[in-house]
Image (cartoon, rainbow, N blue to C red; front, side, top):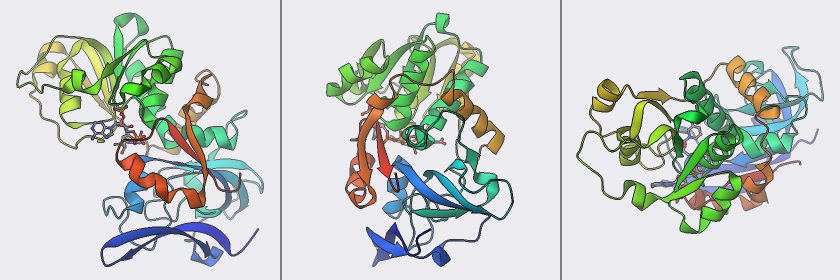
Amino acid sequence: MSDPFAALLTTEQDGRYRTELVQRSLDDLPEGDVLIRVQWSSLNFKDALSASGNKGVTRRYPHTPGIDAAGLVVSDASGTFAEGAAVMVTGYDLGMNTAGGYGEYIRVPAAWVVRLPEGLKARDAMLLGTAGLTAGLCVQALLDSGVAPEDGDILVTGATGGVGSLAVALLAHLGFTVVAGTGKADAHDWLRALGAASCLDRDALFGESSARPMLKPRWAGAVDTLGGEPLASVIKSTAYGGSVACCGLAASTDLPLTVFPFILRNVRLLGVDSVEQPLAAKTAVWQRLATDWRLPVLEQIVAAEVGLADLPAWFERILAGGVRGRVLVRVNG
Ligand SMILES: NC(=O)c1ccc[n+]([C@@H]2O[C@H](COP(=O)([O-])OP(=O)(O)OC[C@H]3O[C@@H](n4cnc5c(N)ncnc54)[C@H](OP(=O)(O)O)[C@@H]3O)[C@@H](O)[C@H]2O)c1
């Protein structure tokens, strides 16, 4: 155990936010059962929001962001985990108002901690991270609602993002015909390599927002990471009996829609949250991601592998929608 340890710290001065590498002490960490030495973390859209002063994510500064962390247990006052156990934490309050995975140590309640499934290394767990868990929950929601590969095409929006790219890869792995909706014209080959059957340019998909309550039916199901007009358009274009898993707001928090797709086409809108899911539900998805949902293309989803000091440069890029795949963060890897 090393005390002090390295961590990123976001500070506020005159309404401006700045994140830098500093030395922190174990005494700076909140109370909690489990002290974890973090090996790997990852970059999510929400981490960039936290680091840029979004009060909907983080109310109090100074703060260490990082909603994902995987590492080894140093000690556990609850007696649930042995010293050296390989574990991870995603979501709950980690990295929001609890010091997060962008530090060499975290201290959290035992009720937040998932044991790494057999065969899933800490690096792979964080390559998936919250994005992989969310993609998994979206796919599980579609399967639970009865969507099957023979029903037709499944659209994934924001397809080059963390959640989007992992949803493309997972759906393709399960035999679905996946259409990847993306704003990045130069990413089509990459998306096909992940398993997309075809790619659609974001403007062609959502270019002309229509006042019509329903559009030509195209999708048996969809995973939407964008919200707003794009999500409304996806729902209007979903075929009879189809389902849309809604997990993101990269475009907007609005949903300009009538009830017609729901009451005339029996379309179902499935809300997906990965943060406050009960631990058992998270553990079940992680177990699948380590076994029958293990993705052969996982390594192709790495956008970059960076150290803590490199991370601040990535915050603006992810907020601008400019990251393709997942940024892995080596903390003590
Ligand atoms: N519900 C949950 O528990 C949960 C969990 C994780 C994430 N999320 C949410 O899901 C969304 C995606 O998260 P992420 O970590 O995957 O983010 P990300 O890696 O930044 O991916 C977002 C993608 O959306 C597209 N995009 C970005 N800005 C856009 C805009 N203004 N208009 C249209 N498309 C835009 C881009 O993909 P293309 O260029 O390919 O279109 C971008 O790569 C975020 O809103 C995040 O907050 C929710």
